[in-house]
Image (cartoon, rainbow, N blue to C red; front, side, top):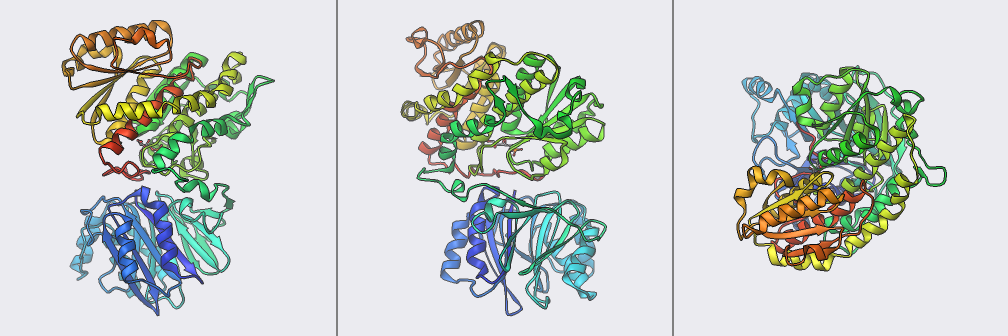
Length: 613
Ligand code: F6R
């Protein structure tokens, strides 16, 4: 949800910023822009659309010879995606340039006040209000730092901003954070800032994560940070071990395809070191205070909080926890939770599930649970992300950076982490965890690799059905959330309307949709009683001329002559089956998206981290 990057140091800033933006484009691709400070002047180039257009513009007219600058890639909130509304945004007097991720809630009120004082507005953005506000404070005299500090006091909303100005004596960037992520990176005689470490991994592994309310001043010699009270703040430096090679496509045509294929490894990495197969134990000591004796044993209810694909993982997690631990679990959308005034006390454990650890709705829900007295944990893929900082304990998914906007390997890793979490909870409550629970994990990566090997067949199925305008996905039990996830993947990647439904509910409405043009993806896996019922639902579809694409872990002979297409997947344990089942659905969405000529890594209107509510 907007990517921001900044540099001050001895190298040429523009190419560095452009490269950083190429790692952040998944956060938004409505427009992109760069500004540099050269000889005390600001020079900016912006383009509507993807970064490629900015890159071409800069190839024609480079912004060279400056050691200080800012870059931005936008996901539009206020103001249409256009060159005019692209960042960096300059103030009326062109004495400062600002980039912003977030939403300024009181921007109209501030704009009215500034307009009455004669400030001009050339864009429709809320960002320009902040630029003019800081400029108005600069006019009163004082440093850029003092102006930013004073301006942010008047702002309500969420922001990560960075500002450079013509008036600074030396190259400097002033940054402030309240909500969206902002981290600083350190090199030799150079300092960076970015929304995400991925932008900087080529240059540094040493980062500081700014806290909410922090203001930082960056120069080539490093950074000084102040907290919300204006007091000097020590923020720890952290070393991130992500390999920069992981953020390349590595020979694949798209990040999404690469990430689908990385799942066997990501799953292995997620349970490695946490499962002792010999002693039959799960170790989640990363849960910190929650892992202390007696704490988890005292939990009586669990609230799983998430959005989108992570919410689908939560639905599977409910099965895991309720079946393995027998604790009641509620699953909530992050955006809904706090508005239903949930019943929470110290016996409730709220678990926020978020790949990015940045999703504003999930964070708000987590905070709501904590403020009502609940205990708070998170499952996240990003070290140091906000979710990991507000939670008492973390279970990291070790999926590595996920760049494709549609979540794939993060989802299956979340399922593995939820399974470990359920087993750990079971263990903490004195229930037996044994080989029956743990051994299937050891076979899981191989089973996922076998599911991936169905790619050629799935490509063929995609070729047969990519022109369909609607799809229905049906599943029961643990496969119902997988049906939802399959449908979500298809709609976001191919723009085909798709619905996921509990198979048994089809007869209560969606059956009216079925005709000879509607492919129905039916998940026929899991326990016999469930799979047999889905088979009956397939008969109901076929009786109405529907097209059936069946996915099964059973003998495909039972579906021959009934389903139009049959994808077989390896059979694993009851709990781990959904992890295998989703893989062909990801490949199907991907192949259909490619056949329809869609930009699968950057689908329209989406952004990877949704840092606004
Ligand atoms: C869909 C997708 C989104 C995210 C959702 C939550 O493919 O990626 O639905 O799952 O925006 O994101 P996180 O997990 O980062 O909180």
